Image 1 (tube, helix red, strand yellow):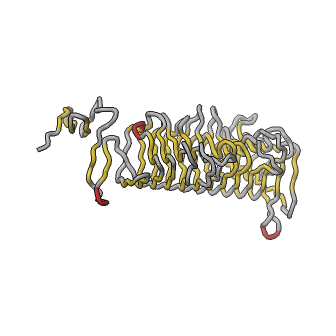
Image 2 (cartoon, helix red, strand yellow):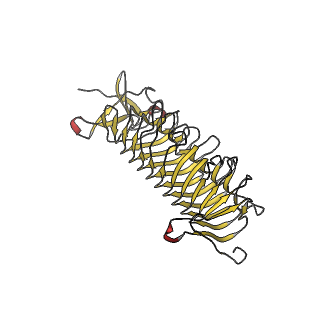
Image 3 (cartoon, one colour):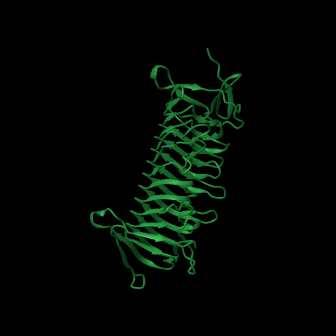
Length: 376
């Protein structure tokens, strides 16, 4: 199909029909190829492409572009297989893999196999779309790679289940994770996304996803405590109870810049934890946070702005915090301003318009001069 300038290869499905491969499949250097599965009568049985070998990867897509996999169940059956099911990268041409589409596919271990390292390993790839897929039974489902870029990746309307470590990790530049369902890890703990040491995400968006059904403690759904995202949006997600003990829905660590967490429903024990200092430009607004600790270590977030706070025990809706104060009000009234004494102390380099309190009183910095406000 590639030699003809592009085309579609069909695998015709029928009940119980599998295509077994002991060897590896290579799409390296190919372009314009669609591998399509035709379901059986009634659409109940997708053809299954089963890898029975042990060498990694099963399917190689290096220096290839415009490659599509659609309507297929791609699995591995050897319980000792610990490599990558599908892997991108640079081939002899030294060019990126790009414009890849995985649509309506199932990626899974079969016959008790679950030790694959990664189902979709995407180093040195650009413009990758993964949609309407089920990914189950591996260490990691989808991964970028430390030391390599993976840019413009869209993961939409997918379901993740029974990964051992985390479903999605190490986003590169412009990763969108939208409308996905994240079941617990194989251990029963929480885990959906993780940025690992030595990587940085640029422009990471997690929007409209469901995360739940946790049965064991000790996990975190969205973990950016070990490595940062520069431009992080966590919007409109339902993050269900994260188990027990020290579980956290979202962890934000040092070096995260431009953090927007808004319109989410999260449950604890801890909803959002700023685990280390120097998170810059954090906005937390319009959330429904329910947990014994809705927000932990907020003092670690620098240059933060929040507005409209409602508080009851273990329940915060729409919390915002400006670092110098919060908007509050009694009896549901909004608009009053409550300035809180700041644990770090007074600003060392106040800017015009800054206002703060400490043990000595209320201060304001205007026209280059700090003045104590005298109240009548």
